[in-house]
Length: 64
Image (cartoon, rainbow, N blue to C red; front, side, top):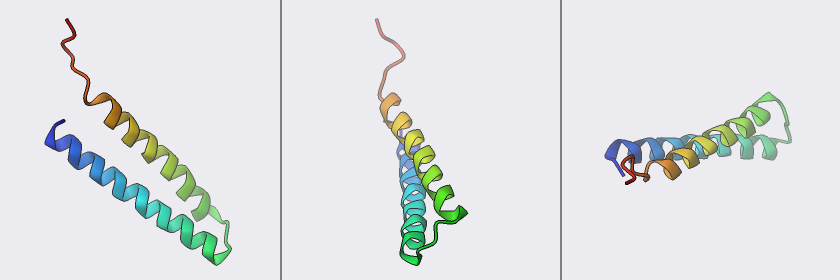
């Protein structure tokens, strides 16, 4: 795995954790406003991007 891929995965994980913090704060405040739903959608989107990046970066392009 390339160094740049590792950096991208770490940044993706930090974004997902930040969005999780937003969602938790919205739940604790009892507010299910737009921030809550944007946080959920963002976690799903960035989680999928990170999973896709992690899954397909290890595959070789030269399959003989």
